[in-house]
Image (cartoon, rainbow, N blue to C red; front, side, top):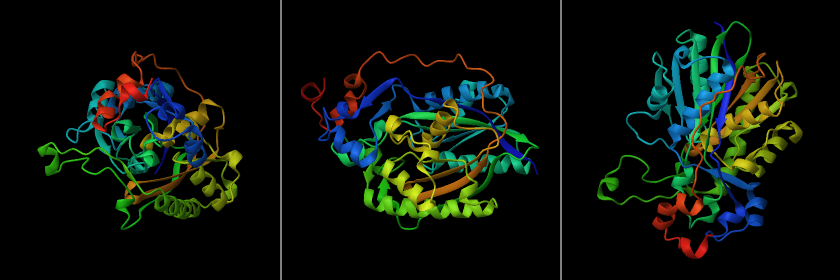
Length: 362
């Protein structure tokens, strides 16, 4: 049947860094309040679209793999924040890359989108439907924040991550996966009216990410732990066989709770939520790139990944890392640096929520 090896990886983090102290200038919060509850110190906000961020992450992943866009059979984007419902943002990325022969589609399972996409592309490669895929996760959730809700507006950041999967005869790639969606929990995490609804055509758009932190914490830890146990069993492994754990970067408390529940040492867990906050669908590929760039990923490693998101969707999988741990080359593609400041970038969003920028932010 063959395998779907990860042969390239790349990420993009927007240049504008927003610290907790920056947020405290216009949100009733503080660095201590945010960090003690979430482990977050800062996040990145984007001046370009979700598709543009994903495009650059994809360019970097292709260069790392030593492949061109013409080699791709599939361009798959996991996201909650596509610019348009129709056509797909993946089709925009395909065109920007020049992936003339590739199919393209978006997948929205909230924060689990990239992992779901990885599972689908892996199965397609192993079934012989395609030979090579670019799987991306990208989000621009800064545009969905209600700045009057300190319990949620501090949690999210923008960014993109991508991997190139390629058919291989060597045992590598995603070896086992478990996916699910907890029934009757849609209200725990949602962006209401974020799609085609009659209200939108009457100009009654309401931008707000609604968030029930207590419910999400309890459900997420339980569901991900069960998924990890099932994925490990399906791979014929135990937690002792795992070399590295790359969880969804939503909250340090959830990550630490997962570590305890799995009896897995924190020193073998990849944690970057402090730097990037929750980048939703981009979270795991960004963290995976972080681990690769810092030398934490070694050839032949067994890596456990776990994720959860709105729906409440959840999943986990075991990746047997192949021999590729260094990039073939680096892309020279660039997105121009942002020349403004936070005040300028978020002016429309702040105004919508009644934030008095001139009085509250430097």
